[in-house]
Image 1 (cartoon, helix red, strand yellow):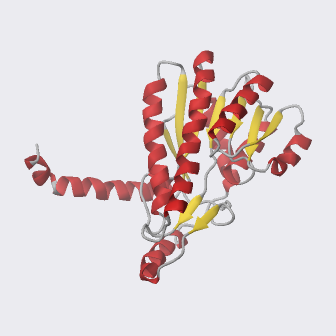
Image 2: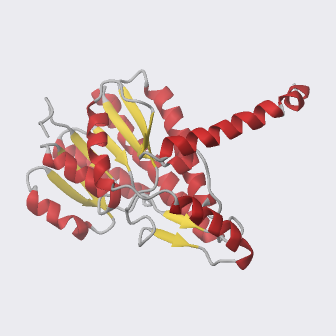
Length: 275
């Protein structure tokens, strides 16, 4: 891959595995500089060994707001600037709404939503001062349509969609761009150690099976194949606000949105009476 005309400096959360890991490696491989963060910085040791001059590995739990601000400032101090901010840290919580405990729900929201908010708020003063920057937010096609027994996870992604949309409107005067990354199913660690499951109630077994059947018909993509798209987005002067990743995403989202529009239209006469 040819080097960009001017290398970029990245700040990426959730860099130890999955999408974040592949995106960090791709950016480093083309000569960019990266502040890569992970809860266990030892997971990034091989990157430091391979790219000692261009990677800064920082320990970070995005639920620690003060630590997020400190990490962003350390990255700016050591690298001089930040061009691309990638809010990627997060995990999946599986369980029906009734099954999910309050503690698990709060932990999911704290990580997936407040972690992103903290990162954005930490980065914004730097990007505004530069008059440039690109914020990439890892959402999901599950932030556009939801699934039984993945409701809390989907809720966090719906929230990120709203946050990203508002942020794009708020930052358009500052030269700052925002893109929501909406992957379909990929062979990451999403269903492994990067996920949590609620205690199951047997009454929801049928709903669980229906969701499993949907995903069984959607072979997971290779997360490595997303890297080039992310680099292209980072280099665009006018990137899209939203980008679906994976060939199964658009047909499913198109169907879900068609169903929503059909419902609104069929009930529009009742809606109009409420004016």
